[in-house]
View 1 (spheres, chains in turn red, blue):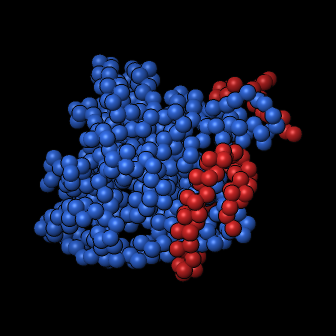
View 2 (cartoon, chains in turn cyan, orange):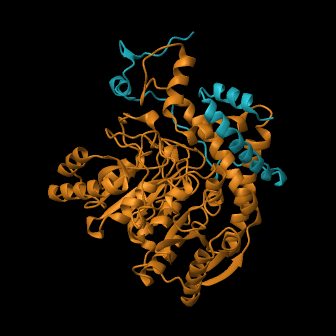
View 3 (spheres, chains in turn brown, blue):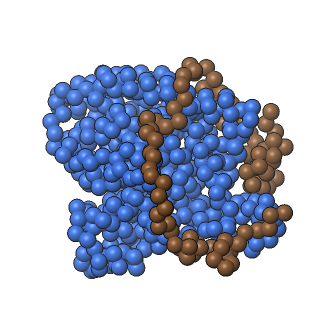
Length: 91
Length: 457
């Protein structure tokens, strides 16, 4: 059952905080969409297609190659220290 | 390339952008530096704009989202790399719905402008590759520009139809997605939006190569330009009757029927066909898969390693939540909620798993039809470009419904091309030709013939 509490719970899991206004706006919209999604209930059951075409496994040898230089990887953030990303505290 | 030409191109783009907001970034410095040291290739002399979600080395690439503001990729996407290798010059990144979440380009990210239709700036330029179609239409022919765009559920065909350009969406896997800021991994395709079919064919030949960095890349060494100028006599066209009735503007249906009559007069054969599973289930199944995949993809944006960030306050839950809540736009948040819900324990089988089973049924239905016909034909969009004021506040469901013609085709990963086939109220109508997997050549032959015989539409 979808209600405001459920939307807040999903948002919390997805690490998004919705304002009261957003929650109020989204609830009927999401209910409408979920109701519409039910249209597929009656479709025949077949094998799943994870992709539209057949994908072949792309194996390659396990060889160490040159990867992106560390400074390139770090250039997109202000949060770095001693050549590493700096993140928020864990707890 | 002559630097004067580059300066001129940038100047014209800036002028157009000021009025229509089709660019997120115009990269003059990079374009000049590229022109100074440009390899001679098959795309020499051509300018390219690149949809914001496709990475260009050193040029801000945000997928139209505030959460990626400031991100300058240290690499080129495979398709961009191919364009540069062949001598094409990149001039900027084009506007889009945030992460591709929309069909009208009104779901732009926080702080981004809404791009407008170059034919009537009170109207939508379509989405999500709206900026790509807008600049393609707005630039004069002699400036020799092609846009690199991307489609998940119709984001090349829709803006191409609304702006009156060619939009070629290749088969899923034909063009490598490496370097694409992904929306839905099992749905995303990179392809050209161009002023004419030969340009689109030429660009496809350049970018449709196998790439080992994308495990779904199939590639091709085909020369798609070789399908131009072909006789189409005897080709069989299946007209999708479901897309010409209820829900489609009668004026659009009438232009499509006129185009069918033209093909009939050239010796191509046509018959009407109904695709009940694609019509009934294709659109919701597409949206379920797209939302499930996108909500997963958006999980990586947390304001730590790249893009927008905040002061590192609080624990990781508090910090990530603060960044994501501030920088994601409304539609992104809505899709995160819907996609997360549809993947939750207890709902996953009914939504996500079932949608992937439906995809098999839809593919099978198209494949059966494409054994009988060389191509299928439909309107690209059921209407001409609507007024921005009339659509921006419509409920999301109304927006999703507008993808009725394109989403099932994209769900099945089939190649399709949108070509202008007339006007209604001064706005272009787009016709969509759909082929079997990896049969882009037939689409190019038919579209090219139609274009040559309808010059100026």
